[in-house]
Length: 375
Ligand SMILES: Cc1ncc(COP(=O)(O)O)c(C=O)c1O
Image (cartoon, rainbow, N blue to C red):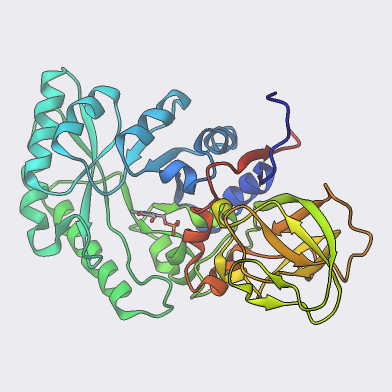
């Protein structure tokens, strides 16, 4: 039973992903790259991706929460929880050796106490809120908290970091101000004898739009979406990374329907003339944006086939007028492909009026993740 092929699958090209990682590493050197693999590597499946990156020499991984950290620890690379840690998560994370964020003095004290209880030294990065307005220590409060944390037993302040809300906007004043604030705090801490081995602020947007975020005093960047060959829709694309994703399915029915036939829920499309239509085995449950309805196309034999009618949970209907040779069972490319008709994550994001992150994170549960690699 288990060898029945899946109807919808997402091909993740690990060779391209590794190539992207290497290109990013070269572009930001001497900064090192922390691969951000939170949310199951943006929904693509964290372990195969992390293993490929580890083999390619990735030095460390960033995640959002403890369960994601635990999954990656067996790879033997430092794993860092970005952004926040809850009180009852501290003890097991310290015991496991996960690098933790310090977002306030109470958290610093709790991490220290847990480390002392376990007879270990916890590694932590001070998280500054220089303008994101989400998490971290406000600039004006940073120095006393850092000094207090630096004096705590069992706590090694390995790093200091912050995050940008606007780095997709080339020349944004706020982004420059955030870096000024960050550098001032690093200098003030250094004047008090507190030195951070790792200093990082750049995400993918900043790597592309703010070269300053990849130069001293910064010596690490955190990238997620660029690893997948995607970019924020706004801003520059200075990295030459390539898309890693292809979403595929199959044609499940081919019928010639008479003129006047209404297609799908709401009959939002009506055939002008007798038309050969194909029903494709993927819908919004698989991550296809509803916005493809009557506007997008899918590729069959490399030929764009317009979506007609409203796509539904499991099926999408296309016109097959341009591919009369299509057969039931043929492969359909929903996203990806090559040549001028290739469909990118950014295309779908624009169509859906969202950002590429939501597209990548929205492939459905039943979509099989297939990892391609020549290795
Ligand atoms: C703190 C932090 N750093 C880095 C990243 C990576 O962002 P990106 O995928 O844009 O590179 C994220 C993701 O949202 C993040 O929350």
